Image 1: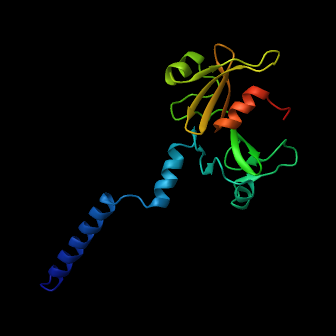
Image 2: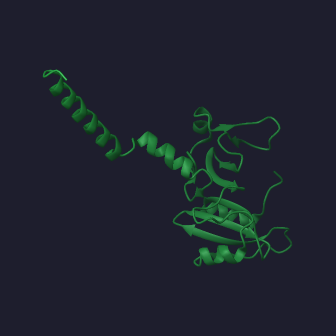
Image 3: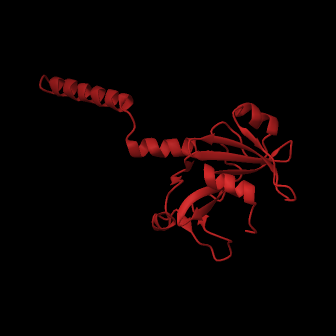
Amino acid sequence: MKPRLVPLVIVALALFALLAGYATDRQPSPAYASTTASAASANTVDFDGVGDVRLGQRDADLTRLGALTQPAAACGPALTATSAADPVFADGELVLLWVHPPLTTPEGIGEGSPLATAQATYPQATAMTAPAGSYQFDGLMVTSGDRAYLFMHDGQTVRKVVVGYTEPVQRLFTHGIGNC
């Protein structure tokens, strides 16, 4: 190697080592972290919502963002990112999500989960008896502040899951389920 080339190679190798170390020690950018978190929790619904759809968001905002659509043959609006959650709005605000497989809570409870597993997972849950004369399932309601999970069950298996604000969830359970 020529004498002048040696320092240049050493500098290049040092720069390469520095950049390689930086790349492995660096935390992901917020956008990347959000993407990887979304991928890891793609099948998870929590007290805040599902994916980038959050309770309390306005239907107009979700539509503008491309997260909500109104299919002609549907009973109501639909989320574009998942068909496993059906949104319910009150006064233009997302208040409930009907949740279907493969979505589960972070603890893994969803439609088809054994009731005993849901009860063991959420020992603080309140047992709810379906209104007399209704065709509704009994329920198990878990609350966290103003948010709730409602697991409707047949005594053995979770059959329906609703996530939303506590008051609308309670009202849904007490007054029944609409035709849609």
